Image (cartoon, rainbow, N blue to C red; front, top):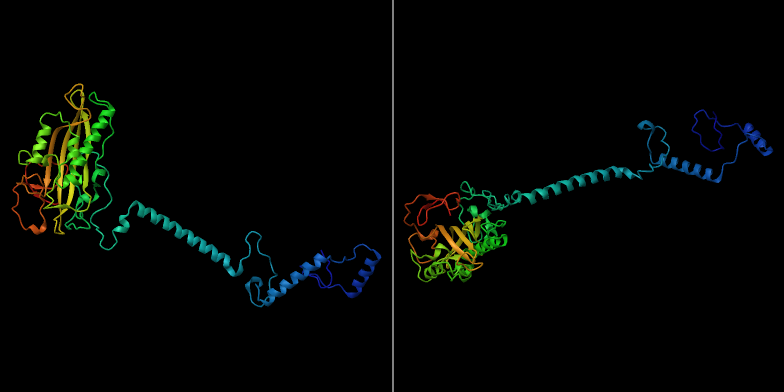
Length: 394
């Protein structure tokens, strides 16, 4: 098949040859006479496109455009437009942009994964910081939901400091103060309604807080708020507590219920006391509910004129009761103390002045107790009241 073209046009047919002048003159004559098959004058748009293609070919040739088959010296490939979907790709910039986007996407994923890991486990970062304590996990412990079966792990021989008063202690992971005293969900028992049981739990918690965490109580002041939670109709108890606070002694010691330090001998470091334990309840005598609390408190202390830090540990097992005034000689909403037990660690064993007396490293050697070794952080065992043992750690 032949391809008709005007002089100076282009053809993609390799067999196409120029038309002799005689034949072209005859064809023109026929066209003027209206004969069929005569060549037609190209339209203005066709001439414009032809000129544009010729110019692009010449530009490609001057720039040393692509060669057929990739060989030098061959005729340049005709100019081709960019793909209609891809857009222009000037000097390979499209491929580099794609690579940059892929690298940026990968880095973004890595950053997100890193943030999630640090959020879930901060020790991945804190453990590599200068001065970080790599021997103790600092993540808070979950609340104690059952009696422990052994001594807690953690802690080392590093001494506490004013900046880190719980360093070297398992209590570093314990809750701060009242946050560690949680009440269980109340339910009706012993003829007491759910609301009355909840009242007994809240009052017992408040008694623990005011008796062991209130700054005024710790300074040795009279624990008026704690006393106000107790039933004044409980036989003998109000008088006994008042006498113990006024005239402390071995048989009437306020430490059986309140934690107190002589401000002339020891002051609390900061405002944080570490706390751990649990609270339960059960039916008491008909028309009453009993609440059982078992908590350990860790106090960081310093002398008034010193910077050495020592810790005293107090564990309390307390049972309170809320009675129905219609069945008992009791005040509505007030607690009765059924039983109170305590273990003290790092305090003078034979001193009964109503205060705890911690020892500090600079105090020098003291006579060693003759009792067994005691780990005050071991909540799975109980040291008999009044006994003095050799502490394995504080």
